[in-house]
Length: 376
Image (cartoon, rainbow, N blue to C red):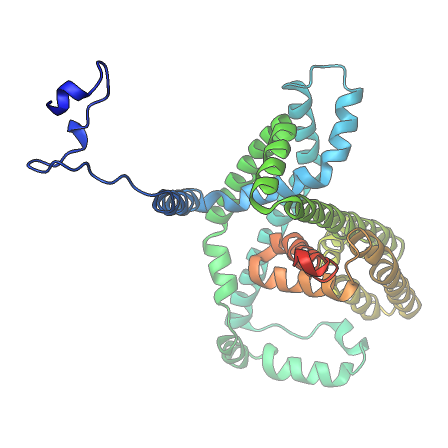
């Protein structure tokens, strides 16, 4: 009996699996091979996606941070808003977040750019004609020594040119040359941040559900707990850095106005931004203290320095540790290291990524250390 006679009618043929001239069928790939191929394909697609989205990663990171930090407020906003939540609520809340947080930051960046241009023009003028020591310089502590140094190095054009020539002005020059390009780039990041934020608000519930299912499938129950720790850390860091920094800037801005410093609102905004960085606020109110000393306002200078020190002490030693550290049982030392290390490694967005990474590491350590031996 031939093979065709032994096969029942309609049975699948193995002809497509036979090599020419060989009767045995080709072996099918094993499950381990398919799994390896799937992992390679997934890794290649992830690398390609990161490469394509590289210029937009900053906008995606900022949008994710804002969405995590403001999600509880957004849910209450949706509950009270009369328009439909499919488009109206996400759009309205995105505009609100832009007006409250992002637009003032962009305005401050523009002001910094203008100040950099003025500084570059001043440096060029000093190199050409020199500049005499101001009268208030002699009223500062060690004013006589400072005045002599100024007259020897900045009043004479040749000495000023030599001094400024030794300084690294590359940052200022590059800033002044590319200020338009930088503003355009920052505007692009701003637009895509708000656009991404809108879609995160609109689809946040489904995205959270998908991420939770993915973490549970890949890492098990520990993955879901780790994700919760990261979300809590980001939310606590935003509250501890941004809100507390804004509070410091507002209080010290009022103090600047009360003590008669020029442009107190701008100085208060700078204080709020620098207050997000540990030990950054004293740089600003320290400059304000020196300006008051230059105006012979000794009592006001002492009062401003004491008030600023008290505000920073309370914020850094009582409020921030509670908002950031206690949310995920993270010691303040690791919060501080995460903030500084994240700022060094990732720039401004690292202020929020650093503590989140530290919280994830501490959560992993506790997950392993506190688990029973049979689950390790």
